[in-house]
Length: 353
Image: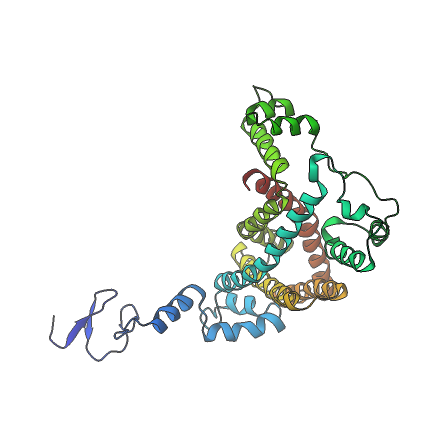
């Protein structure tokens, strides 16, 4: 090697001294490792949080379909790669969403333990006490309203509980076995295998059924429904790696002659990035301010309109055709794919929480 040459620390190829960047691999020749360099490289390498992200963020929000169209046309370096954008925004979303998950799991565990206390299904005694003052009633009402999305209780049912009219004495939860018998077996500390037999497990039952009985007993003992909910939420990021390609496949069927599957996948990456951006803003605001329900419905409608405009801009068809295909894609995904996925994820969460 000539004396006026040096080897690159990364690829070990020789080059002339004086170069600021290696002509072979592009690494900076004098890149001392400092705290700033360490964190910059981490963010840059894994999330590409640079000028490309800033150039891509505004079009993502306000120019539906533009980024996907530009990427397909060959502008691969001007804007952030669709998979990188999706990864970065989804990480931000699930970080913000984790605060909501923690609150919901704690509330659900607390409510389940109150509802199923003593193993006889009697509703918490505080609600049966006729001497509840107005402040306690207000607190109970607020709690029930906050969890109305999960309990599916109507305003009339909430009023009935708070006013103590037609108050049910038992919950509608049934475990499918003799709870009094199981309680007595747990009290005398018999083995779980004996309890499984009392619950109805047979010797020739397979692994899946045995696992179901084990998890059912675990839930019955601990009343830890919040942990199941937490496991459900933890599984969602993994599930999305399957749901996104399925959504792209639905788009492919609707636009069968409009490019390869990879083109529809690019479109789906950017659209899901937009969804996660909107949801991040909504959940972030909910952490500091309780957003009214009408705003949530408005956001849901805006995502549909965004998708319709994006389809029109990306595939170049008319408004009516774009609206029709947007409706078909939304209905298929929301009414068939998503509910099926929720059932599968819930089943998985129950088995392995």
